[in-house]
Amino acid sequence: MQIEQRAVGDVVVLDLKGRVTLGEGDELLKDKVNSLLNQSQKKIVLNLAEVPYIDSAGLGEIVRTYTTVSRQGGNLKLLNLTKRITDLLSITKLLTVFETFESENDAVRSFSQSAKV
Image 1 (cartoon, rainbow, N blue to C red):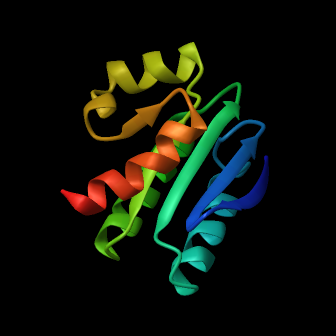
Image 2: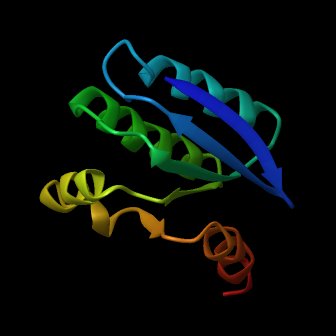
């Protein structure tokens, strides 16, 4: 798996490419998010458009990442879920936990809206 990082205003978008599985992406994601939190980057969007597959370890890592970011006062949102990932989150009831978006603009905009509430 590869992760490309880019900033959209004060939001960090992580473009994930490849499979998020045990030993193939789960540690990479953990290290990247910990590094962002250490730099006080607390608004994070995971773009999953180019992730064809997530196994249970990968899903566990995304949940752990969400928990870590939330505990540090940040916010993690998911973008461009494939049908397979949407189904997986639906089956595991995690769709109710994550904020998910189809559009990057909507995802980025949601951070400023949640700050005003």
